Length: 183
Length: 181
Image (cartoon, rainbow over all chains, first blue to last red; front, side, top):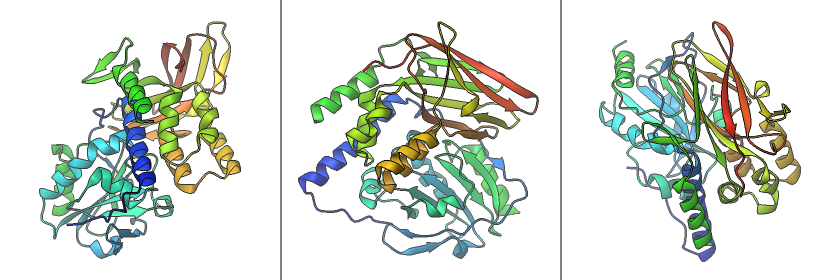
């Protein structure tokens, strides 16, 4: 279980939090695409090695993708202000539950936000949420937009990708994960 | 402040315009050409100001963007081939035939750099835009905001070009109107 510490409830911070939530909701309303998810995953040509990914999690503990070698890892780049990211986020937890932790993990890489903001949306998650505050880690990855998801195989290679929202417990995506687990 | 923002939310959520449904989604404008579907909604200044000030912009800094003719775009690749788009190839054409380009996101970012906008705000801005160049693999669905380089006086047509393995194509969205708030 990952937890994210919250700050004191000073009025200024409460106002900022309200504005952050209201601003996000305003965008949700203005960009009513929360149900417009894409489908499936695309193979990554040549299955290149995954770029390095070493970031702090919500407990300020370092997490290194390289330490997950031998497992299939779903790496999801996201932000709380991004409507498709918000829509697909619960499905990250659902798909994680379909597999054994020793075989499959989800790493949700938040881009450019602070733990308070992320916690106000995500709460406690069963999978690591990593913080790429300056977006420098993401810059090394083939990210074309948010959300972007990459499936890393047991050998640490980029096997599948998706740009735009998905429902990760969709049978097509679950089958892709099983394919990597069985290969 | 809360009342103001909640009122803005109610206006935005209410829609009040002729929507075209896609599942339970309502877009004011939507068109399909081949495998590509493009949707658009106008974005008002109040919503843009609320969103970007919550991400770290000052009201003064974001004002030019919030006053521009802004839209959210969503584009889906429903086919089996890869699609690509370049925002530089998209144009608005007004009733008098004048052509207006879309402003490249990098131009806005240069302004934010000059204004000393905080890094976190610039990251949010950058990734909230419809990217200058996009690649849509099969099944991909990408959304983002974009502004016109000038505001048309009235309704206009957006000509959005994309490319696939068979060549260049266009999707037209007709009767677009900038938000007025």
